[in-house]
Image (cartoon, rainbow, N blue to C red; front, top):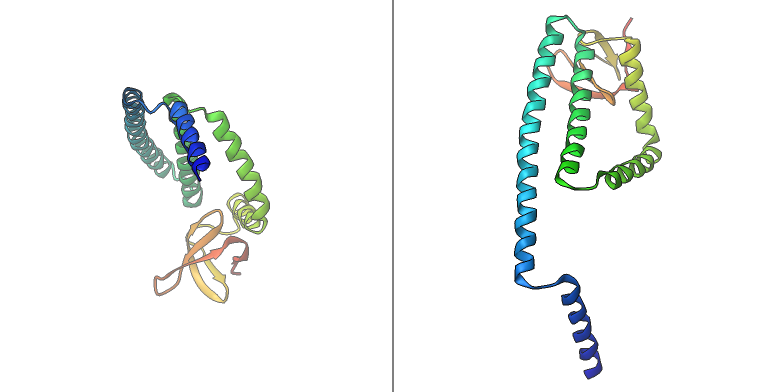
Length: 180
């Protein structure tokens, strides 16, 4: 039993030496990383606010130019996600976090998720085809699963429709068909 305590004591001494448990070192680390964290939060708040303002201006521009509502919603959502993701990577790199490993992890995770969600990717492809080929657009009458409704919004994975009672329903995009 005494030998066990000696081994534990040696292990604790090695851990203390490795992590350098002196108070001055920890205070320096806390101040350094707290300043970086505060800088990160401030940049993210200002950046997200700026991105939302730019998206609002681009949305107003597309409204004045009579863009199709379907494309306007798609571009707004796609641009919002893409710009925010790139901005987060930029800020992380600016603060000093290596983003190459983050991008590698995101790439590997994307491949794994893509293989796991092949059925959902079919819905994604159906949504893209509907946006490109436009068999129907926002405001058109549809029959989906035996219910007649109007298209409220077309998203990549599903289509949101409203019935005569103003209730919203969401259906997978590949199952919607045009009413003749």
